[in-house]
Image 1: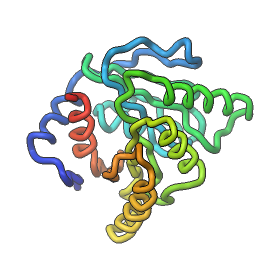
Image 2: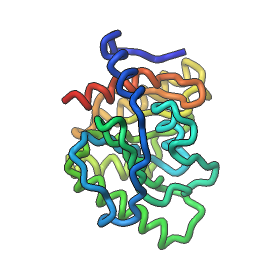
Image 3: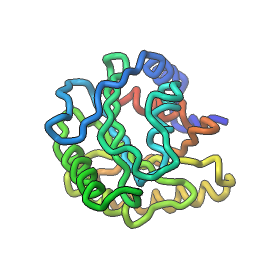
Image 4: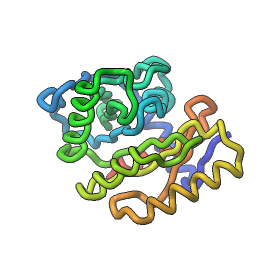
Length: 214
């Protein structure tokens, strides 16, 4: 089942076309100095460790191994950049929160992601991924506050939504939307996705295609 709410056929087709383009890995930046120069509109994928950022990147691009997936929280230790057909840059950020790594390394990744989000000129929107089964956690709220203070446009995307009943999903969306409404930098529309069932993938592609066209 696909969630195509609020997107007409033309928008959905634009999304399909954009993500049919070749997507290539550019580099992994472990420090601010390594972040590549770019003039492409950029989309960042942020979220707690093991929320499914890499899985969502792979589902969007239709490539199962483009972004490395791991069951071990904290596997992504740098910002991974992907060029989508020379039309958009995707940035897969290190997860925040729990990670099986030394504390100083986790703090280093967190600083890297924060500096990137606060100062990246080509960044058009940050997708803040929220595990649909659990909803917003304190770590998510801290990031929302930081993005709001820095006036960085972001949009909440629920992941792993195939694990919920229809009623349960509606309740989670309503709860997140209620909190999002109090943050000026947040996009009001909450998107629901599942990399496994492909729920909402076409809708998210359409959303990002609209951003690329701006």
